[in-house]
Structures are given as C-alpha cells and as structure tokens.
Length: 287
Image 1 (cartoon, rainbow, N blue to C red):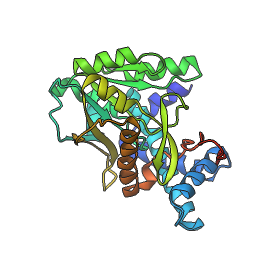
Image 2: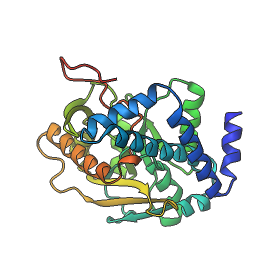
Image 3: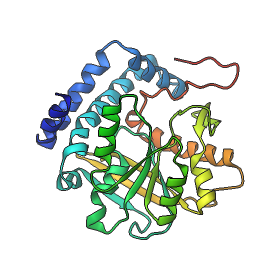
Image 4: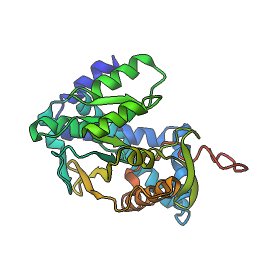
C-alpha cells in the first residue's frame, strides 16, 4: 500500500507534491516523539546563541522542508527523467564528461539525493555512471527497494560494509563517486574532529580514498532555489592540497566546509540524525 501511494503521489503536479510535503512536515513538527527532541537538541548544540523561540521556529522550518523532501522522493523514485530535470538544475565548475578520477563530497541537506540527480541526467549529457556508498537498512524488503530506485537510471549503489575495493575500482574508472561523510556511522575508520565547535565522530573515508586513488575531491551541494521552485545542484572546483599528509586534519577541514554551507541555510540541514551520539571518552550522549 505504501509503495502504491508513493507512485500515486509521483503523478501529481509538482506544486501539489510540494504542498503535500509541507503538510507532512507540519504534522511531524507537532507530533510528540524522539526525533523532534533530536532536532532541537542538535540546533541548541550548534546554535547556542539562539533563544528557545528562535530554536522552535527553526525546527518548524526544518520539518517543513524535510516533509517536502519526503514527498518529493515519490518523484525521485518513480518520476521520469523529464520530470526530474524540471525539478533540478546542475551547475558544475568542472567538466563532468571527463573520466578523471574524482570524488564528489556531498552533505545531508534535506533536498534531492545527488547520486540520483546525476544518474538521471547522465545519459543526455554524456556523463559517466554514478556510484556511491549506501547504508544497509534493517528491513531487507525496503533495503532492496532503495537500491533499485537509486539504480534505476544506471547508477551503482555500493554497500559501505566491506566493499572498499569496488569503490576504489569505480573511482579509477572515472565514474561519478558521491560520498556524504557528515553522518555518525560508528567509531570504526572515524576521528573526532570539530563541527560547530563540538568534537564530532566523523568518517575519514574521503581522505583515505583520495590518497589511494589520486582522485581530485570536489564539494557538492543540493539546495533549494531562492524561489523554492526546485533545487540547484552545484559542484565546485577541486579542493587545493587535498588530501594532505594528515587524515584527521583533512577530515576536520571538510567539516568546516560543511559548517560554512549549513550556516547559510540552517533549516535545510538533516537535523533529525543523531550527529553527536558517539562521544569522546568521559562525555555523555546528549540524546
């Protein structure tokens, strides 16, 4: 029933999908639950100068945009390339048709998944296929569905658990490699580095993969256009002197880029994630 409903929503006019999503977000923002507490805890930690009223207002704005993005997933997973191309504009400072080894470093804004954007638009623009890590879901049915939806335009979703060799091979082939490291995936292959002034457990994959493959590293963001009519996917110039000699310093550097981008549009960041759940020794979990 859920899958049928998603497909039905994807057939609606885009403005109706957006309004429906805003409604979902409104309901979620007023519903008691753990994730509302997580959002406000994250906002208080990252923006300690804001008043309680300002935190509440920012949290409601966040839920509105998150609800919109959930509704829009019906189009991402079921809509046509034409419909997707009408929703999304891509601007790149690098030649996307080249086969140069390149890692696109994405971050978790509430908007459209970058891997699906580039996969959908690849054929018409002579771009290489898109590969990226995905985090395995507990439910095997939906785990496979997510893979199928992400790969429906020829993409290649790679399970991050034990598949480093495959991602290295894809980088060297010149595929689009999209990785979003701004998420707490446990202490393995991670370092505590500053994020909004907080020591934050962060995976070090970007630096390590860039060193192994010699790939250039470009930041990538997907954010709402100013008039909220759709999304803008921007890919920036390769980072200079990256990777450096110190993996931890590279990881901290990426976090600072993320923080700068988030401060420009704080409501769009994915605050429902328990970003600070793993703590350095002696510190309590804030959730």
